[in-house]
Amino acid sequence: MKATASGAPLRVVQSDDSEALPAAGNRPLSDDDAPAPPPPRRRLRAILSKKGRRFAEIAARHWLLLALVALWQYFSLRYPDLHLQLPAPTELYKGAIELIGNGQLQQDSLASLSRVGWALLAAAVVGFPLGAALGGSRRLAWSVEPVVNFFRPIPPLAWIPLSILWFGIGDAQNVFIIFLAAVFPIILNTMEGVRDVDPQLIRAARTLGANRFTIAFTVILPAALPAMFVGFRVGTGIAWMALVAGELVASTSGLGYLISQGRYLFRSDYIIVGMVMIGLIGLMLDGMVRLLQAIVTPWRQGG
Amino acid sequence: MPDIAVEIEGVHKIFGSNQNEVVALKDVSLTIGREEFICVVGPSGCGKTTLLNLLAGFEPPTAGHLRAFGHEIKAPGPDRTMMFQDYALFPWLTVRGNIEYGLKRRGIGRDERNHIIQHYVELIDLKGFERKYPQQLSGGMRQRVALARALAVNPSVLLMDEPFAALDSFTRERMQDELVRVWQREKKSVFFITHNIDEAIKLGDRIVVMSPRPGRIIKIVTVTDPRPRDVDSEDNARIARDVRETLHVASRARGPAAAVKSLEH
Image 1 (cartoon, one colour):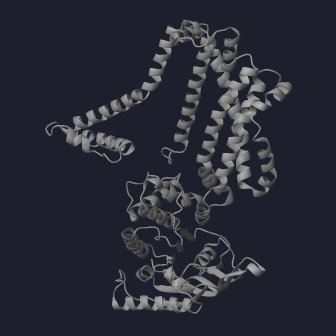
Image 2 (tube, helix red, strand yellow; image 1 turned 90 degrees about the vertical axis):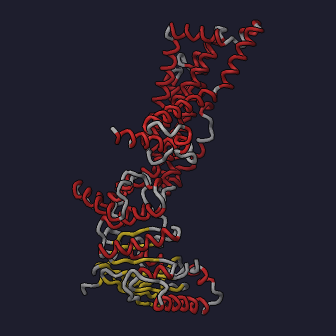
Image 3 (tube, each protein chain N blue to C red; image 1 turned 120 degrees about the vertical axis):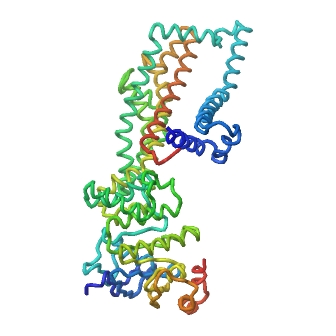
């Protein structure tokens, strides 16, 4: 009883502190409370209030956003003539319920997500090995780097007309555009990551008995992994933007399609619901990549 | 001869070619005994790190021979492990993983690995930190992990490239004591590069003094004091003066005393 009470919670408090307020340490806990109550409860309360404080802080940070929405609502009600240009948030809510009710929002989100998923998979399958090869072999980079540098500055959206001629309108064309958007950051960051591996680490591995093959997988890969993740994260962000642009122009499903449909139907609430959904999913994708990053590269805290 | 660990015989090392030729080492010969602690001092550019790299097997000599236990040194190998100034720990591996790295490369089984790791974690006094990543450790602790990693594969020769130069003076002194303690227990040959003359006197059986342009050995001093040593004792102070004087004369011979200055941190 005593061991868990005085041992484990203390550790939680300490690790919490070291993350959030390095200087404050444990002091507030012992100073705030009266000296009489037993330490375990005091610590527990401290943890809870800390969690609560953090939650409150997150909520508090969104005050401006909420205030803007409220202002928007006020103006929409005050000037009902602007209904088409800027429908009120309450109308957006109705529109969203409608789109969810007939399943269109889910369908379009899923269509967009699956396109991005396939494109990212393809970009990873091509980009990581190619980037690693370019980073590892100067001779290969000598020939291939100019090719990469030629294609890289062409915006993926500029490929849309040509890709429609190649693939028609549909999934393949969309996936191709997203792939182009995501693959270059992955290639370039992986290449840099492999090039920047500390030569001392390779020497250390050699004196410990590692051969070239083992070094590639036990030194170069983990050393380059953080840079590879940066590439993947940037690629995911760009891919998501390219996707919506691609769907606006040439698609029959997806969130970009939903938005352009909204325009034809004069349903600005659909347009804005689609935009909000695009933002939310983009945020979620970034969160997922970051989570994956934290799991795969645990030695880099907060990287 | 059984009590010789490493032979360096007439070694030359030249970098570049023709006009841009730099003679990094000129006719260096040295024999390192088994369980002998050699300290190498010299200003930057005297070739001490080049010599270390040749001993590690990272590069071949331009001329001459380097042998470890009678075999020509051709490539790096776990009979000669190296410790680096900036630790060179694998940041993605824990303390445990770093120590284990060389053992895995040698194909040592799991149970024996655990046993060896246990031994070295205790030896370097890092029990309870096995699951920490290098980033979570202080400089002194990192260098201790590097020492454990280098020792774990049971090398006969330990090559150390200014391993304590990046540490603050208190930590450095503790590490020196600890290194002597570990060395006395594990009995390896040590080839230790430093630019700190006191450190060399504290640690070495012999002090090899090198001079730059071209890099060569200009003096070898034997320190016979039993350890732990008092650097300020009369004998040791005399040795320090002697080494300093030697370096000074060597740099005077070529002009400004820049070389000695780099030694006086």
